[in-house]
Length: 31
Image (cartoon, rainbow, N blue to C red; front, side, top):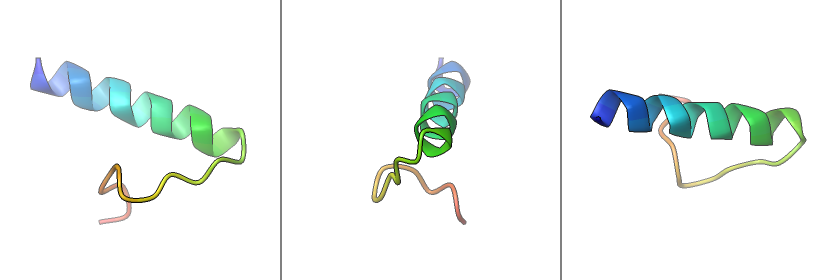
């Protein structure tokens, strides 16, 4: 389940990023 949740979160973050939305403090995606 943890892997599925993480994948979903990354997918949402990627979608938001492609729409020009910057997500801060939610995902350690830059580490």
